[in-house]
Image (tube, rainbow, N blue to C red; front, side, top):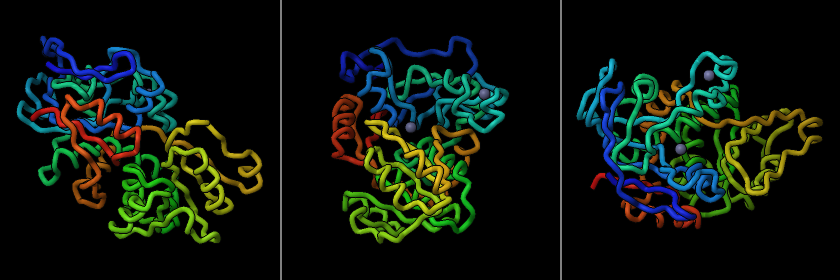
Length: 327
Ligand SMILES: [Zn+2]
Ligand SMILES: [Zn+2]
């Protein structure tokens, strides 16, 4: 089978022996396609992942071989996430499932940018679902990233009808804004790129160029999906006193939120990293009901062109790459 691996600062496609169940519990799935996540880019660019690593986790796949107590069967088209919380540890008990050691240790093998992947029984039980028939493969591949947004919204724990501002209207911002609306918030988005502003407006959600925003606007909650350090100032400017800032992305220079702003203005600054199974279930419902629309966000690449998908994403030439693996 073909896999795409990191090799000396490049992503290269190579042949490797097929995956087989060999009596294990779980399933071998044929990957139909896999979304390219911002976290894959970070792991590649900052060399967090070693040579030989297969990145990718936003898969849509077909079960080819299965040995499981679940109801899945060969031929089922599924979506899945990659990490599973243990439910028992101090992190899980306090709602920080993505900090759980078991969560971090679990993964799909070898990774999503591969023709075949092994899913454990745990994956099948907790985070895999049948792909809804009314979603295309590409739409269904947003299951995991939208789950991350859902979790961020729950962690912010805003009251119904609160005013929420999404800073940064990349794919995540566009999904976050729609999900916030579905959760009953009064949503506005902003970005510096006119195309992205228009994209959110086309979805019926107020959006502005950062430079044209009403200086008196104040949000109860600010959702930081921008990866720019300067956006931190925008967040501090538009959050109301006593409001919340939900941090949803890393920034290159790691600028912080000023101590005295947090203190004197009684702000809450909190992070949200990765979804729990229950958030993924909500994500699936939002996609299935089209309360969150994700069509038209992705650019499709063949596995052979995966390096170009990485390059185009890093250079902001596209919103989101989807690697189509089964032709
Ligand atoms: Zn992801
Ligand atoms: Zn745990």
